[in-house]
Length: 268
Image (cartoon, rainbow, N blue to C red; front, side, top):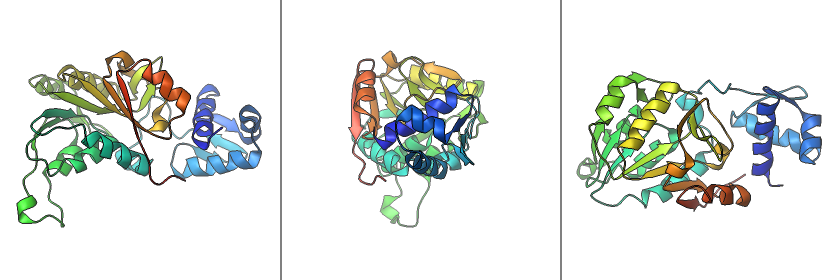
């Protein structure tokens, strides 16, 4: 069993057990040594996927809670960068797209900063800032970027603007494609979020798009948030990374239109 598969199994065990697991039990369940389990828990604690305690681990977040944007930004950086690189190749000149809030969609926005021919509709303060702000390495002739429309609304921990104001503003647009990040992607539950208002606004973003493109690193597989906002059959393209197990990729490929896999150059 690969490290990525073990760590997904550990997260599932946390969920099954109500948020606490023992090293000895995990070793038996996974068929590996306790030292291997401890190394996995050390790595997962460093990525804030769980909290290591004496003799085992506990969940950092309950299903209905949402970690802040700064916490999520520190997780799976290499995977998110690779996914964003690949996603950027799917954005043609002259198109209008919608970008949801999320750390992976913000990475995509960084790759679109110098694309003045495109138009972006977003409910993300972070995406808006990346697409419209200037950085120290920009020359004067680099100032022009995409045309960007930011909806209003109430701010969430992930820097999303949500609620009826956001939904009404979003509904006035039509876009060629909607790009969304997810809290979780699951064969049965579909695409989920821990925030009910954000899930509702994600539905609004999906409705205005001619197609739906999902950006999800391998750790999102099997994660289920409280609120479902789309069925897998609605997904035209899923862009993930090569940490996703072949069996899991095959399962998703049977439900979504196309699965694109980004190769990660740096993996521990």
